[in-house]
Length: 71
Image (cartoon, rainbow, N blue to C red; front, side, top):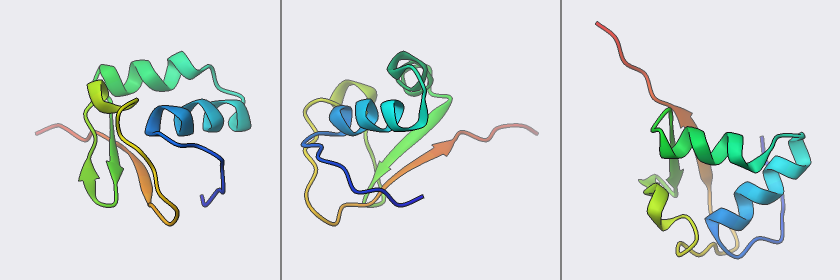
């Protein structure tokens, strides 16, 4: 899904996406904190602790990806 939002940080983006899609922000944040999902910014992983500090720029690509495990 491609969206255009007025977000300055990854955390701002999560808040905007939650509102847009009808999720509680805590649902998304909990999934990232619990490492059920990875968040990639331009192909690089963003740690949960860095969500607020990681700034966005025009053209950035953010991907939410479920963690796959098994054997």
